[in-house]
Image (cartoon, rainbow, N blue to C red):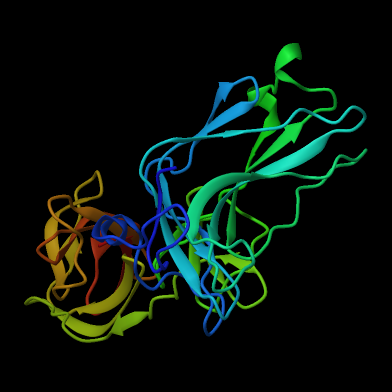
Length: 334
């Protein structure tokens, strides 16, 4: 069987770790579950250890890589399956269904009683029962697929219905600090601050549950400096605020020159009121609109990417008087 493992002594059916084993196996520090333990699981990429029917009572497992955790004393074994493997299932029980489990398994005679050193894909048979459950696994087994074998199933009566019998039990493990696909919603996190991707939602383990990750709030930036007023106006104040790329500001200017008279339609020939500082201006090339008011009348201003704030329309009284304070405000995406 083409199952390779790194860090396994020679013995049994295999010669022990080869250079190819080391290159193909996912050697490195994977997701921890304790001080000396590693999260067992499949290495993501493509569709590792995919399952497909290979006969009435046989299942083919596709290529892939995985980590198999033994006891704490054993540590973890990196595994690579470099060619599809076929496993077979015994006939169903006469009375009850059972659930078998396909696993990646490592036998290590330094730690178990099986007398050989080998990595393999095998079927762990479950117990027939009126309400069957998957079998309990020994150390150094990583679960891949659960297969329901109905009572009375055999090749002679059509075998296992692979379309309904398979339950995907693969869970993923990645290098420490990496973000794994979260296809195992009931699996607890390994450490506070671990992340996973669950159907496109980034989640963070907080020590007791997985919670959707929300980026920290960005600080609010403010300024009161940098605005200027042209001849005929005096700057009274400028207050600007931006957050998440949204900018809003107010400024006050006093008309110091002669009053500005509007046309009958209320239009003003683009009178410059002020210039706001760089970094607080709308993104080019488009202008944005703001509002202005002096307590007697109001109007519309245009704010350009160059920072100029020009009065364009005015209503109420037909003129902008001196020395009234004109309050201008605008909000836009930077």
